[in-house]
Image (cartoon, rainbow, N blue to C red; front, side, top):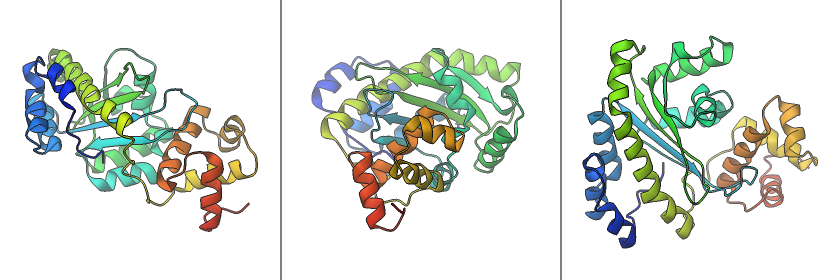
Length: 261
């Protein structure tokens, strides 16, 4: 998970004018209390059970970078998401990258495909059944996603109305989380929390093909995934191998016996 960071004083000079909904997070940061518990409390106060914030520090869509995830979801879900490469099929990600508006999501809102069934069946075990997701933009051009999850399986008209009524506050929380942490991550070049973790099967496949000279586009065609997803896999594996580029990652993976040249 994303390391708990205490924003720099200049950030708090702006943060002191923040709306009441994010005050618990700011208070926790200034007093060095648990930011996870503070944000968890905000999420529950808005009617949700858990949160997830993910950001990549790439300034260009095709540039691999370090990726950070901060969440109070069970660690087993985070590992499963990584190992099964759910980033390739997560319909929530597709929805938010195609919309500038928050997306109220639940299983029935997406096509009943084999991939979606697999994803939502796995998520259901961890109580991830509905919620709201949004794409957050910023001056660093570092894309981020903020998701609030609920264990409610369906979003009926009453529930949709409840979510709609707090969407403004959700947006405020998302932008403040992004602002309070992103500059610190980029400026301090903190190592991602995934460093040292084993590569997923898909990451190994991408790296193996790269070692054979395949471009991102060719890797995507070979594996049946999008070029954007290929870049995301390389972003993750660079972080895990503590490599600065593909060539270094290939060298390290080869030396460790993870792939063959």
